[in-house]
Image (cartoon, rainbow, N blue to C red; front, side):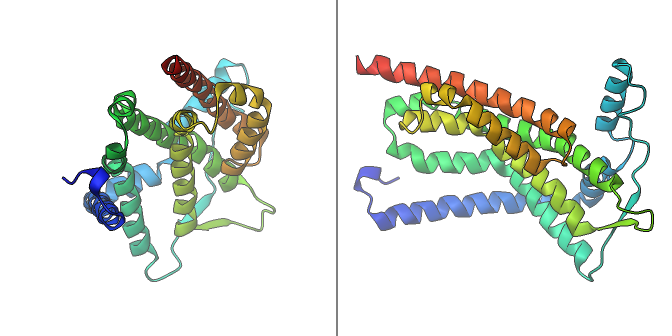
Length: 269
């Protein structure tokens, strides 16, 4: 491997190209595997949240009964159908869903390739401080994906699937629209849960500080509520359910920023 200090701009581009190629190949390999498990991907995973037996709806129903609210949060039916209105609709959905599944599964390896590209530019102390980056970032991403799948997606599907302007209108959702909703919920949650990692690096390079984060906590709450309103149905309960873990992530980010800031201050002494 070439010495990073002796590499030209074109050498760095060539190095980046191979990291990108390996990342894309890993996504395609896992995508091909997902493509072969069509029944599980669609019948179990994708169409799971449209079933009244989905585990999240059972949780909400149990919580409702535990709080003495009866069946107020229980999902009785999903009055809608999913249809494909184009010739290549089902094949396209199968193909792009497989690629999405490939990206989610290959995410740790993609992070590894990113780390391999940037780590030669760091000194030994910085590389030691960033140990566990791939593990922590991957764990946060997968937790976010699970949160999007088990919380945001069911809330959205239940609200939009049961919403009606008239009894004369029956909900026939297009397959691409349904998958798009699920994809947006899962990916946006996975990326939002990377907030502590982003704050860690922003603190290290001096863009933010723990004092700045604490001072602007109320503004952050407004932003988080706005994000919750964007990625959830327009009802207060759903927004609060989603905002709570996001605000916890923000508080964790303040703690991480404080640790990094204190370490930087000690190193200056």
